[in-house]
Every structure is written in C-alpha cells, then in structure tokens.
Length: 205
Image 1 (cartoon, rainbow, N blue to C red):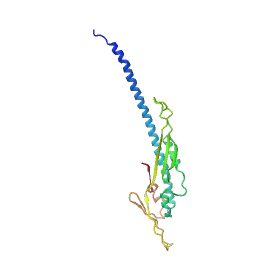
Image 2: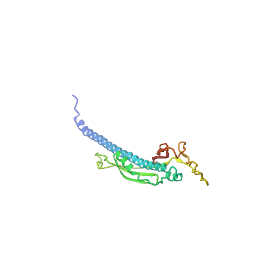
Image 3: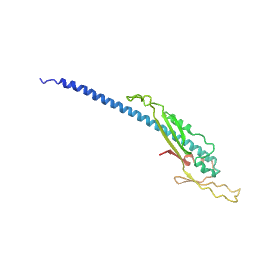
Image 4: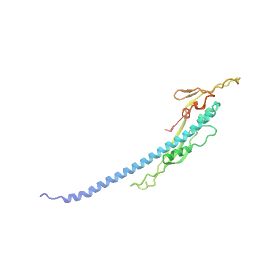
C-alpha cells in the first residue's frame, strides 16, 4: 500500500486557512470601500440638488421681479444681473432638497448675485465595517450652482416729444436659441416668458 502523506496535508491546512482568511478580509475591505463611496455619492447628489434648488428659487424671484417691472424696461438689466427689490433668501429650498436626499445643509452662501454654494452632510453614517470609525463617519460634499441670463435687449431711443396717446413699445427680448419675444404690455401674464426662458441654471464647472 502507498504511504499516507498525512504530514503534508496537516501542513497545507493552516496555509489554506490563512489564504481564506485573507480573501475574506479583502472582501470585507472592498465592501467597506463600497459603503464609503456610496455614502460620498449620496452626499454629492444631495449637494448638487440643494445648490440647484437655491439657484432656481432665486431665478424664479428674478423672473417675477421682471414681470412686475415689465413696463419699466430701464430696470430690466439690473434684474438680469441679479438686482431687484423684494428678493428673499432662497436657501430654504436648498434645505428642502437636501432633506429629501437624506442630508442636512451645513452652509448655503451667495457667491455674488447669481451664484450659490451649498455644503451638505449625510444624515446616515457609512456604517459598521472592519475599518475603525466608520460607524460614526458621515460624508460631506459641496456644490455650486450658477444663474445666467438667457436674454438681451436694446432700450428704445427716448423721444423728445412723446405722444401721450401713442401705445408704449417695449424692447424685444432676444434670447438664446434664436428666440425673440415681442412683448405686449396688454398681454396676459401667462403669455410672458417663463423663468427658464429668461435664465439658465446649472452647476458650475
């Protein structure tokens, strides 16, 4: 009968256990990295949504101010540049969108008149893993959204002797995409350009 190699088998078993243990450790480590990456991605998604929401709220306010000053075209440029009376802080919208993405706004700041930067933190931690400290670790992310005017116009020349019975003419709004708005002061407001006709909102590059 051939001899049994029980000694070789006994020596191989600890090596097998070590290799399996190492593979399991690597698997758990990759899982922890995946958890952290998913948490960071969630934070960035929340930051992007929050920054866009703040900028869109300010865009809507500016569009409303433009509609209210439709008959005062001398004020239009200031409005398109982000200046208007009665504007209110728009960061409450950032807080709403962050909350809907399971995050909290840490800061929401205007960087100029047409730019908002928001920092958020996830409400959830990375979770327990083989990496110490992940059970209390939360992810943070920052995003900036920009508002840009889509339209331009030219003010009509001032007449020296205006006819009080002559119908007031408003400047034509020439907007991106080759769209020209011939504005009628007597037209219903629902026929006026919408906020997204007047302004673009996008994340900063």
